[in-house]
Length: 380
Image 1 (cartoon, rainbow, N blue to C red):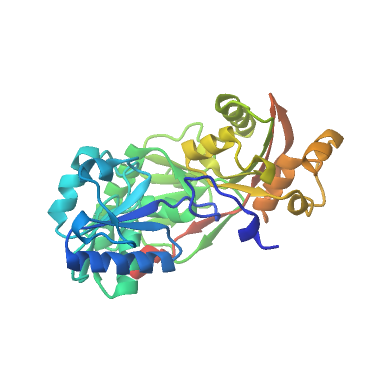
Image 2: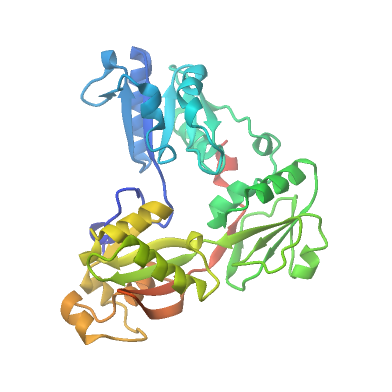
């Protein structure tokens, strides 16, 4: 089966791998910079990324669109939905993005390249937004030098936000993450405990981290990371990282409201102690590829939305329930469970078909890999 032919995506999604990746806009302001703009866009597209180049009107052409007169407003348009690359002086980028900057958890990646392509500098959202990683990728492809200033990267230390991103973990405690980073930079050992049998470790565990076999061992450290769905009594110094490893299969009536759909899925998740931030993909049948509520839900939580044909869903042999009515209308007897099992291959069904108001849902969890072999650090 060729999934690339059968998977549809919501407008905000660029990949079907379960990881959301923003589109990239590249800005240039001179003739030389615009030539590099075209080159960079070609490289990014060759890396499988979606990007668009923009130049001041004087240098725009069929390949590179003209920047609008209000460049500052354009840079802030749908802030956080697009990564931005500026070719030119760093000060230009700073002036255009200044009104929109919020925090590293919501800001997009912002990078600057000089127009000769000698240096690539992550300016904003180095880890969570991925600008350090993108700088490393561009440096590797172009021969430019990545100029990295983030403290953990400069010192070669463990970065908890990179770890969370690479491991597919949901980081919502911003202050807790800052405390862990500060402790790492002060030379403290950080305990890490994964409260789940379904996890693997890949790469060399950095010296700053002590992987603990029990929670009792972990709490003996002043600072600790807990990989779990919840923490009843986490205690001061604990950073909770929730596994983002839930494939949610969804079926619904045509025209269901976004609120009803979201409420139904949240109820299903809550029964298993899960939250929306742990869903890494929404899946359904191709008949629902344009369903407004599903597209809106995927957009709101920045979750990839994939759909399958009835024939593809039929490849799943065993399901917990079947419906003749659904089979007559959709061509397959159980949409949500089959969709969850298909896109969550290798995972475990934790919720079979669950009936909600005007919708059904099913949940599959896939194993967690704690990723210490950071591609970011190798490239930079």
